[in-house]
Image (cartoon, rainbow, N blue to C red):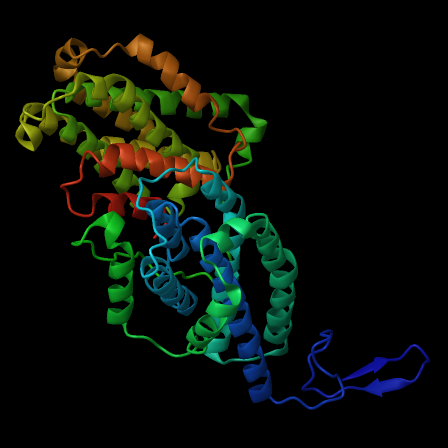
Length: 456
């Protein structure tokens, strides 16, 4: 391999050097094994720095146990990869050895609007991308397959992480350094233990160990019987792109109007079904949870879907403003009632309608037609016809409800006004209102809902 110098001569470079990287002497022979060990050291050091930021955030939020544990839960959303495994060990150590054992914890309810939670919210996207990029780097090294393209990619990612993400994350946390240190955070004390944890990054770990650590860490918010249930392992080595809306809608006003109209119609039938069962609130909430989880499981990116977002908002609005004040006692027959059976008869059509509306918004007319949604609407209308008198007697008024639902759906194509963390925390608040506290007796109700948020 030859390259011309500025003086017109020729400088011969060794094939083993990493071209374009200031980390390596271009005239030094570097073997594949040397590259491997050097890159491993760099990834481990990045892992230590990332873990220190996680630990500092935990100390910052230790005045509210549930906020802190929720943050940890979102950090380890994909426990089945080596980077998340190290972070689980770090969070477990910090929680039990540095916070619990030294009485630095204040158990309180989850409060998304707390000052420190807001600060972590500003830093959340940096945490999210750092973990994804770290996982990507670790996968290259674990495979132990090298090419010049891999070498350049790895060294480039190191520079990007340090310059664009790690420094940015550290700068955001620096503004609350006094608060985290007052709560007991000491970087010099924690760093040796964390560094020792990351030395085992490239060694396998038994699944039983991860399950034990996760159960011990999260049983205060999920209960003693909670079992970790993570979804599919991350298949892509690159950060997952944000859900995008088809370009068709930017060009055609009538298409946007059709989506809004379909969303409103589906939502109105959902609200009618909720009113149908409103003499038994647990049945209403169970129906909402099952529908939301079922649709979300069939989508690749439910947490980014504007359709899923509107469905959840409709559930919450109707429940808080119209269903909860009725204070249904739960003696309406439950899942054996006629109303429940009628609602479940419509379940498959609701599922198809919202699932296909999500696909319609994503792909537009080029890849999809809305015929299945119209058919689902016809089926739902026919099935609910025999229960209209009951839903009206329970207070359902379509025209009054349509105004509120239309406002929610009109913004379906607008850019989100909140950041990733703020959106997720808003959803967490809705989940707690609807699926966790009222359905507390149902096994893993909150965990199933969080899975649908793609937080696991």
